[in-house]
Image (cartoon, rainbow, N blue to C red; front, side, top):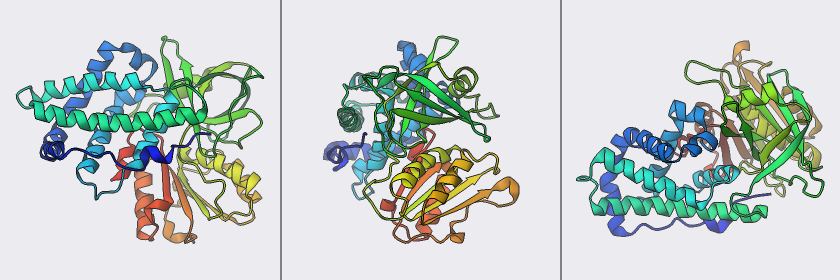
Amino acid sequence: MTTVPESALHTMPELEPEHADVIRATLPLIATRIDEITPLFYRKMFAAHPELLRDRFNRGNQAQGAQQKALAASIATFAVHLVDPGLPHPRELLARIGHKHASLGVTEPEYRIVHEHLFAAIVEVLGAEVVMPEIAAAWDRVYWLMATTLIDVERGLYRAAGVEPGDVFRETRVVERRDDPSGAAVFVVESPDPDRPLPNFLPGQYVSVGADLPDGARQLRQYSLVERPGAGLLAFAVRKVEAGEANPAGEVSTWLHDTVFPGDRLQITLPFGDLTIDPAATTPVVLISAGIGATPMAGILEYLAADTPERRTVVLHADRSERAHPLRERIRDRVGALRNAAFRAWYEAEGHGLMDLSEVDLPPDADFYLCGGSEFLQSVRAQLMAAGVPDRRVHFELFAPNDWLLDH
């Protein structure tokens, strides 16, 4: 089980005054050119290290430009907080990034690769006459403050998992596949080595799955664990991502749906993820999701139904239709196993409209767990804020690389 050590994110590293003045002065310039800087950075890095695009970075997100925006905005968000300590600490953003990096096996040397090509792109776009030594030094300091913070977080996660940095991949055997009416598939895996069982995990965590694709690439994607911890098995849910006007078909989800069945071998990582409930807490829990965001909630419900069935629980979900709702029957069944629980869904195709929390009796002292697309999460967070729910009680996971949107 892996959580971020409190010491890693307890305090924000300090930016020296002379660097802070430069960052304040140049943030607007960087912001106006960031859409040129980040694509150039990735082109430079992938030209020098093609294996990173082939085997590490999500090629779908790269094709859409989502990853480029995420990196730029994460660094800019960190810089803004460095020069204005009065703003909320970005510890949740850093924790999410750290967990995702650990689930991909990221190690310290890769931060040096990013640094080299990112700063080369900044100089090329802005010009050497603009990026004077004091400007380069200030942004270099921002980058390494963020990088060393994340490296510390990731070291702590690897240490908590009992592994060396990056040693997170495990060979497994698929023992069961269940195809859900929603179109999602649940894959249940075990270790083929009885002397090296799969680890336990916290409800709400995920694993990365490695797919060896026909073109020779090894792509990684993260999928939520949907069953109760224990018994040496891990079960994760995958929805096949169909091609749309704005996105290509999901490479890994398609590969899993079309080619992986019981008896096949599959490489996954140890579990990570910070959208987890506190097993020792007794406060009410409100689980709010949309679309495939229901899957981490299913894992949390499995735990609640088995271990704390008396805990007050409210489950809220939004989807296109009842049939599209992932793991709907299993979720309803687990809600029914709780002694003090409520369930409500909004299905657009059936005339329910969008999720409206004013229609729900929300426990005043609850912890709220959110998962879905960025627009959905922004809407729900605004509703919770309007209802007077403090930020410290709101926890979220976004299945996209633009988590930064939710920290503004």
